[in-house]
Length: 392
Ligand code: ADP
Ligand code: MG
Image (tube, rainbow, N blue to C red; front, side, top):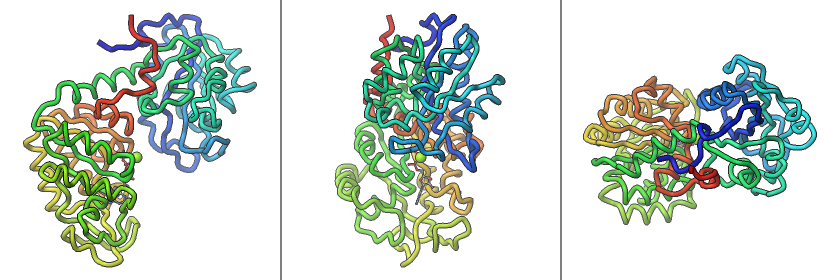
C-alpha cells in the first residue's frame, strides 16, 4: 500500500490547492521545447479541478541562484499549460508576496494560477521556514506531484508541509509504485545501464548497483571517466577529474560486473556536423573526443539486454542531440523495446532519447525524474515524499 495520503483522501471542494509540479522543462526562444513534464501533471490537475478545487501551481525552472532571472521565468509555461488544459491559466509575477497573494485571494473553483519560479528566492533551496510559510499561506491544502524534484528537501517540496495538510499527486504516486518494483522485487539477470553527463551526481549509484544488479553497462560521458580511471588517455573527451578516484575504486570492487565500451565514435570537434570515426576505446586520437559508443560495444550491450529479466537505464550512451552521434543511444532504446524484460528508464535526457527513438510506449516505465528515480532505485527515501501526511 502507498504509505502517504494521496489526492483521493482529500476533500477539495471549494478549496484552494497549492500543487508543487515539476515544470522544469526545456525552453527554446521563449517557448516550451518539450512538454512531457507538463503533460505528466495533467491527470492530477484535472482530477482536482473536477472535484471543485481552485489550483495554485508552483515549480522551479533551471538554476537561477536565488534571484529573478527573466530567462528562467515560468510565464511561457502558463501559455502552454493553458493550451493543454483547455482553460485560462493566470500567472503571478512572484511566488510569494503581494502579486501572488492578490491573485490567490480572487480564485474561484475551476481557476488555475501559476506562480513564478520558486528559485527566484534563496529560501526555496535553503528550505527556509519563512518562505515555506508564505507559500503555504496562499492555499488550504498542499499536493506534491513533482516527482522530478522529490529527492530535494526544498521549501516547496518539503518545508511547506509543516503548514498545510498534504498529500501525493497521481504522478508522484505512480512513479514511486512503478520504481519500487525494481527495488522490492528485482528480477535476475538484472542489468543496469548508466551514461550521460552528470557523472559526479551519479557515480554513487554505481556502488549501489554493484549490490543490486548482475551487470552494469557504462556508456556516454560516464564511460569516459571510467576509461580514464583505467589509465587511458581520453584526449578531448568529457572526463570528470574529481570523480576519477571513485571510478578507480568502483572498478576494483566490481571488475567482473562492470562493462565499459571497447570501441567509441570519436569526433574532431563538439558539433553536429563534426568529422567522425570509430576507434578502439584505448586509441582516441590526439585532438578528438568520444561522443558515442562504437558498434562492437553496442552489440556487446545488446547481448546483455537480450538475456536480462530486468533492465534499468539512466543516461544516454552519447550526444544523441546530434544525429551523427545518436546511434548508440537510439539503437539501445530500440533493443529495450524489443526485450521481454521489465524495462525502466529514468532521467530527463534519457526519457527524451526514448521519445526520439519512438519506443517510449513499449517500455515498462519511463520516469519523469532523473535524480529522484535513481534515489528510489538506490532504495533511499525521498524527502519530498517523507514530508507528506501519512496514510490512515
Ligand atoms: P539524464 O538527463 O538522462 O539523467 P544526463 O543529464 O546525466 O542524463 O546526461 C545527458 C547528457 O549527456 C546529454 O545532453 C548528452 O549529450 C550528454 N552526453 C552523453 N554522452 C556524452 C559524451 N560522450 N560526451 C559529452 N556529453 C555526453
Ligand atoms: Mg539531464
